[in-house]
Length: 202
Image (cartoon, rainbow, N blue to C red; front, side):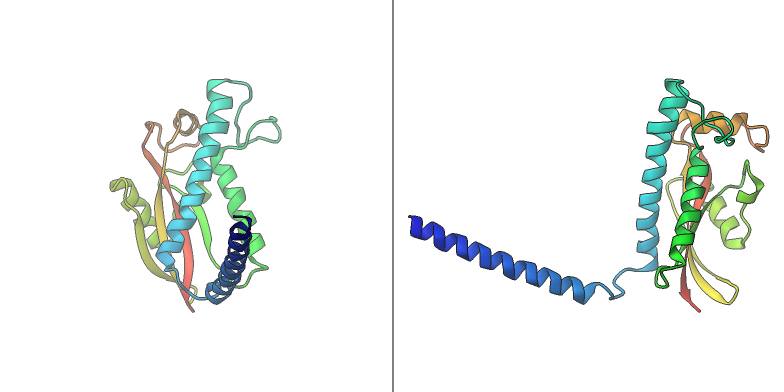
């Protein structure tokens, strides 16, 4: 019995070693192969962004500022010792990614939060693809917009995803802001869109 156990243990150890070695080999083989399409990459990036943004909005800002009222959330968060607004958190992340990506020549993509009704006019769409994409996701709830555009001699795969009011704090912040061009948002409404751009040629 003991002999069988010892043999089994040796077999398992060898099997594990082979599996580990094979795994390393496979990882090395596939690591640099282009196995993912721009659309799939954009969808995956957006899944992470949207999940993080939803968690911050619902679990931090809405809970602490709207429900428990232990701290406020403000665009002037430093002066007012307040929480960063979800849109600011998203922009800060985007700016940090762009800065860190400068040191990674193979990592090329950008993203931004935009709206047809921007509180901050800098977040208004500029290119025709951005304008068409934001309109599409607002008119077709639950659907994404994909296109290819050329900017500065480079072709980009551009994806636009709806940015939805996921918590009451989203609605009150936008409807009550002094600079807002629209004051009738409701929970679940499309308030804007996330634009992800990946270079594909040029």
